[in-house]
Image 1 (cartoon, one colour):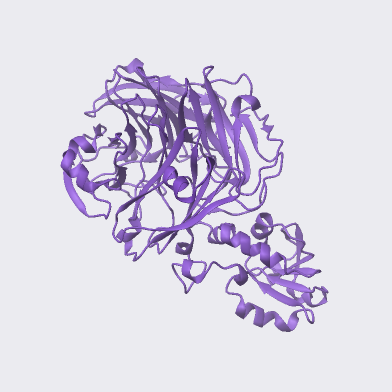
Image 2 (cartoon, rainbow, N blue to C red):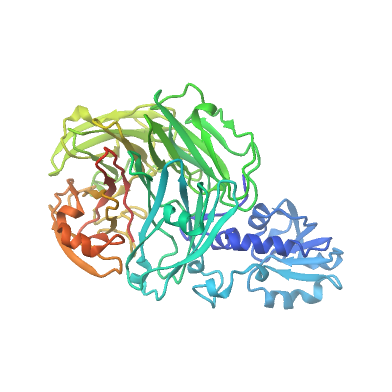
Length: 623
């Protein structure tokens, strides 16, 4: 596994990691290393040698630190020596592993070997024109980046949709720096795209990009860097995959996590009539060594490794059945990637219909929280994982609880089932499920025409909890046979009292009791929709005060429509019905709906439906 620190739950993304992993930084580091004259000494004032040498291995002979307490530590495979010893190293090249290193270089210059060439990471900085905060290189806003699965091949296209939400935080001109990598990791295209001056919507379509640059069919990844961002350093988006000739395949996934993880979970094993492919996309400029990536049945502890190397920024399709033959739905799979991969996508092919979804980060730092079973009555039902029950006449809705932490040896859970009007229709106790369980629940048995269900903790049969409760939700069209799936984790919703960092808020500290969700509009004859759920851990406002705000592609408001959702209820909304044809035409292809509520926090799922029996569904995002 790469020894890199990519994410901190308290501080967010590790800026040093994103600064070093940027594709342009990778090119610059290659040029920097070409200037090395051995022996090479590395001075590590900021403790980043592990990340630097993991991402970019180099022939470094010795490593030095100024912190007495750090001497003797192993960093980048080298034993840290006291800085006072660097003069006797005989180094011909000294690399100072720091940005803004001029003062550091001047301070240590008298200590360095005579005639040694001094290099610093300032030589690998991004161009000044790409910096949002020019006065502080390692400001997180300089690295508002993300990856997206991007394909124009095999009759399938992708379309990335989002909005310039940075404008709401005071951003001026915002533009995207974009680089498309092909399946073999080669650069296919690099370009920039300006965003609307206000909070307008935008899209990036693979078919248009392929035509613009004259590209052959490709399946690869798109690197996205937002320049000029304000208030938010994460690039959020929805990604549609659709059949290029308006065929039956259609799916949607939420934005990828912007940081790689060692473990991912929630990958479903195939049914006998399905093929499940895991798309592995190397997020770095160094190859993933053979034997690093492994797939394992959840809880089995007998992983099967990928016996081939994955090249820099390359994309590889892994057939799950070839690794784990005989494993079938509803069994689930754990994926180990060694921190080389931003959250991967998986693709299910069934009867010539294709759907794509994402796995989730499996955490290895969590431990059971003894406080959760003892939460006071003021916290009500505590952690809730809400998900829709689509109209039962057309759709089958299925839930599969998914362990999402290495410490989750059991899942003590039940299902609470609600009508759309908030009436509780059933409690279904699943018990204390073992880590390797294969229990998928068909919601048909509860007879709810449309509404939602909530996965919650239930300790009547024992078990432990850590708050990182996840599940996979699968929806099947009874007529067309098309399916869609999504996955997410639990939160505490709509209580005035707080526990740790819950209820979460989109802005400011908890409790998070407001809603700001993005809903894209339809395209190419497809209608968009959302299922908005009003989950409540305890009693809250009887009815929501929800407003659907239609914006055009420039971010200007076009129309509003009010929606009242009962507490513990839900509503299915269709922008084309809420606003009518004239308003939708005025919004244009890059228009969107902002779901706002200042009285409660809603949770939502969005998607598209077409006339060929295709539909998509994934959880919404807010900003």
